[in-house]
Amino acid sequence: MLSKLKDAVVTAVNRAAYGKAPEGGPATVGEISLRRLDGSALPIAELEGKVVLFVNVASRCGLTPQYEQLVQLHQRYRDRGLLVVGAPCNQFLGQEPGDAGQITSFCSTTYGVDFPLLEKQDVNGAARSPLYQWLVGSAPGGGADITWNFEKFLVGRDGEVRARFSPRTKPDAPEIVAAIEAALT
Image (cartoon, rainbow, N blue to C red; front, top):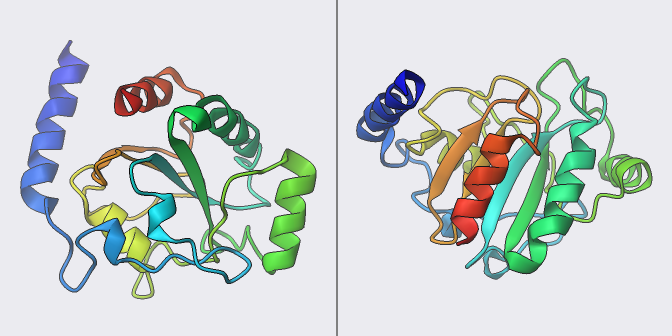
């Protein structure tokens, strides 16, 4: 009970402090040009009306086995409207050093990844991508930097960021599954 009250207070404070996009950042996901790992556009229409789980991913991280659970989540809920989107990032100890072809090959061969992977991007710092400006600048994002690979953001069908989950929270953790279920209803 106390934990839920604390979470509600933290959420309210974050919403008050970070309820709108950071200065110069996108106000909605629709203002962001997303590109797949192969360089082709990921049309915003593919996200509209869906629940989207954005995850910054890396191939050489101790948390890389989370790809397996991400694939399972995507397969389990895609017919109900969930889309998992991976954003490769090399900012954490150089754990995503490969080029687009190497990343694609690793993900499909090792884990059977069948969800979209975006072009490599920075999730922190002055070169933070517009996607991560928007995610971090949301109320659940709290304005705080991404702490490590496999940090997760859940976006509702309405295009609002609903939740942020730490890298160590596995994709099939009860709190993530509950948030996905709630967003899908």
